[in-house]
Length: 309
Image (cartoon, rainbow, N blue to C red; front, side):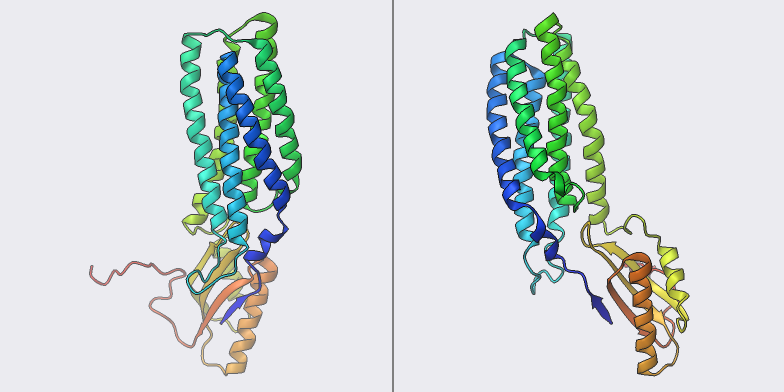
C-alpha cells in the first residue's frame, strides 16, 4: 500500500531562474576581469579568486540545469523523477571547490618560498570590482540559501567567493601600503581553509544521500517503535528509510498484522501512515501488511543472498 503525497518536481518551480541567470552572467564577467587583472598585477590571491569565480560560473550553470531537470515529471524510465539531479550537481560543485583549493595551496606554498612582484594598486581596484559584483550575486540568490542541496551549493559558491574577495581586498591594501608580498599567498591559504570546511560538508551530505543512508534527524529504531506502538501492529521488519533528494525522504516496511479483515487491515495501515507523517514528516511511504512472519523477522533485511554460505 503506497502513499506519495509530496511532489518532487514542484520544489524547483519557485526557484528564481531569472536571478540565477543574472548571477551566471555576473560571475563570468568577474572571472574575465579578475583573470586579466591577476596576469597584470601578478597576484596569486587574485588568481585564486578568479579561479573560484570560474567554478562559480560552472556551478551556477549546473545548478540552472538541475533546476530545469528537477521540474520534469517522472516517467516510465525514471519513476522517482529527477530529484537526485540536485544531489549530483551538489557533489560536483563541492568536489570542484576542493580541487581548486588544492591547486591554490600548492601555488601559495611556492609563492611563500619565492615571493614575486605584485602591483598592489591594480590588485585593489580589480578586487573591489569583484567584491561588489559578487555581493550583488549573493543578494540575488539570498532567498535560496535555505532550500535544497543544489541551491545551497550554488549559494555557497557565491558566498565563499564574496568572503574570499574581502580577504584579497585586505591583502591588496597591505601590499599597496607596506609592500608585504607574503600577505598575498597567506591570504590565499586562509581563504582555502574556509573553502575546505564548507565544501567537505557539502560533499559529505551529497554522498550520504547517494548511499541511501537514513536521513539526518531520523533513527531507524525510533521509527520502528512508533510503528509497533500503533494498535493492531504485531511487528515490523524489512524497514528501510532513505532520501530521494535533500527534500524528500522515503520509507518502506512490512507490517505483521495477524489474521484480520481487509477493512481492519486498511484502518491499521492508515493509522501507521498518519503516525509516520505527523511524528517524522514521512509522507512517501510504502507499507506491506502480512498475516504471518517472514524469516526471523529482522528489522532490516540484507540485500545479500547468504544461502550459499
